[in-house]
Amino acid sequence: MVVALLVPTLGFALWVLSQASEQTKIDPAVYALAQKNGDTEITAITGTGHTVYHSNKPLPDAKAPRADGKLTLVWFTNAACTECEKELFVQQVMGDYRAAVVFVEKAADRDAAAERLGVKAVPAFVWLDAEGNEVGRFGAVASEAEFRGQVTTFLGLEPAD
Image 1 (cartoon, rainbow, N blue to C red):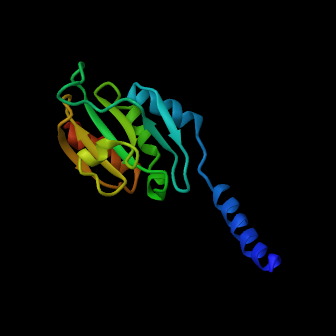
Image 2: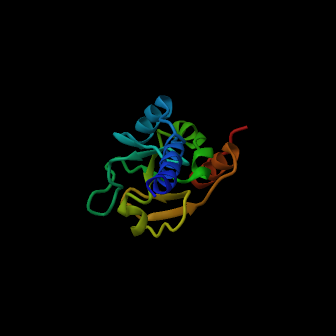
Image 3: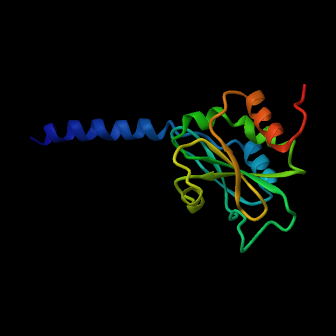
């Protein structure tokens, strides 16, 4: 009887260990880039699908607007989002726009801003003005070129060749 109970328990334990070993990793270069893009400390949250480089700073709002007047682009993700892991190039691209835009990643399941902004699915990109008002939004992007196109179009810039 004890053996009959141990076999399923051992099998479950091995399954848990196999799933835990499939956690995403923290990339030090992306971590540093995320800090620069958001001008803030971040928390890296690993998961089965994506490492979230979560900004610890609250988003701007009417009571605490951005003093510099910059736009904020928020990338809502979560640690189970495999599509989000394919979009890590967004951190690198947004480094090119740092003078005009603050770029932060937020774990949608750990930040009240996702609910406040009505984010229902990830990945989601939400543009905020300096007072925290939503001024635009788009979803998943298939490539770096598509993402760069979304950003340059919103900012009214000429696309890079």
